[in-house]
Amino acid sequence: MDVPRRLVAGGVGLRLNKFLAGAGVASRRKVEALIAAGQVKVNGEVVREPGRRVDPERDVVLCGGRRVHPASDRVYLLLYKPRGYVTTTRDPQGRPKVTDLVPPGRRLYPVGRLDADTEGLLLMTDDGELAYLLTHPRYEVEKTYLALVKGGPGLQALQRLRQGVRLEDGITAPARVRIAGREGVDTWLEITIHEGRNRQVRRMSAAVGHPVLALKRTRIAFLDVGTLQPGSYRHLTQEEVTRLKALATAHQAGFS
Ligand code: URA
Image 1 (spheres, rainbow, N blue to C red):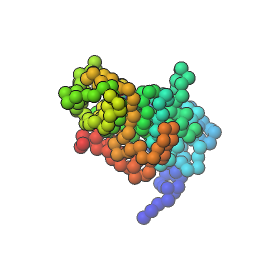
Image 2 (cartoon, protein in one colour; image 1 turned 135 degrees about the horizontal axis):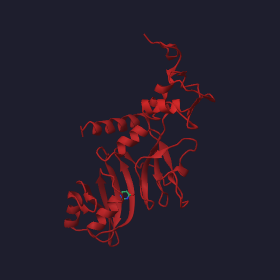
Image 3 (cartoon, helix red, strand yellow; image 1 turned 180 degrees about the vertical axis):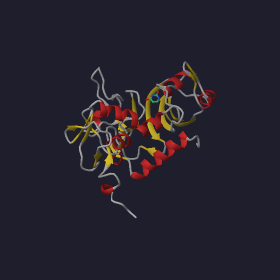
Image 4 (cartoon, rainbow, N blue to C red; image 1 turned 120 degrees about the vertical axis):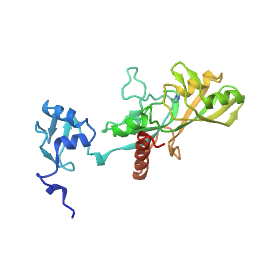
């Protein structure tokens, strides 16, 4: 039998500690420490009892001065980052940031990063757990890049890119690489990797003698550019979020 949540045993709504942990603020233990430290307010009043009931739909809960949104209310955006934007939430040099391109009022974090001079797809979310899973070195999902590289890489260079290139932080994992086109004497390569090391595609290409002249990320797992233009974003569908979560947890469990 369905029991309305507002009437569940023990009182109305959810326990504050459970609500905060479920919303991804921190682990249950850390949440309790935050509550005890007076960091949590419900409807403007500091609450120090972890068992205080809150109604996630109606009560305004702040932690460290920031509004906490229920887990069901997460935001997942697919942004086309233009060249020149930095993938950080703060930039001491005052350059344009990816967070300038998404709706204000929610603290959205980029999932992984793109260099300032790279354009293309970037996920932005306030779901810290999914972001962690998608960028964890052990479970990274596949990402595809189009790289304009200098000159015309021969078979040997392509094979090295595919099999693994020795970089200063170790040999890269196998990659899928194909020639996607030519531009004058230069070449567009489509490169799919599942690692996310710093400037990885640029370093791989340079290591085989063909430095990158331009770089775009065209795909993250099953998400591709579609009709997105530089600087625009779209919300993921519920189905896409479910698929991404399934992918991240399958990687976590070592199933793929
Ligand atoms: N590889 C790079 O070299 N740069 C990026 O921005 C992403 C992948």
